Length: 141
Ligand SMILES: [Zn+2]
Image (cartoon, protein in one colour):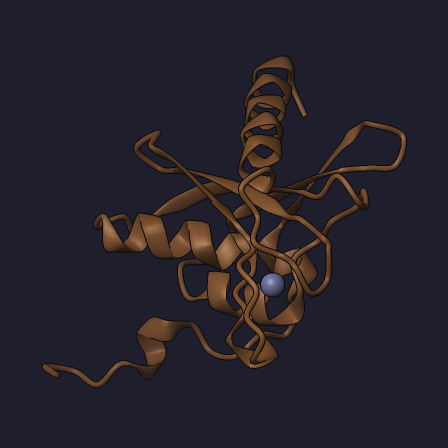
């Protein structure tokens, strides 16, 4: 990762840290924040939002994606994820699948235990994923 990438990734991690402060996680007490930069440079953040019916809980990454997609964004460059309770805060399987809807080349950035940043393409952490969405779409639907 070059200096410019490192600077962007650090900025995204800082935004994710701020987003984690807004968490609603009374059941797990595991706050998580996420920050996304789109291909046009727009920035969106999100936090995890839990529910007493656990299946209704939503992770920080999906919160941020929901905000971005509902604002018309479809192309994503980088997603940073942070929790003050645990480094190496990689997205859960459900979020990996969710994000893959928008491309498997999205960069995922987390902070390692030693404070360094780790960046992986979504395709690396969701190998052998289902067909690309464009192959599943019905023409003229
Ligand atoms: Zn998740």
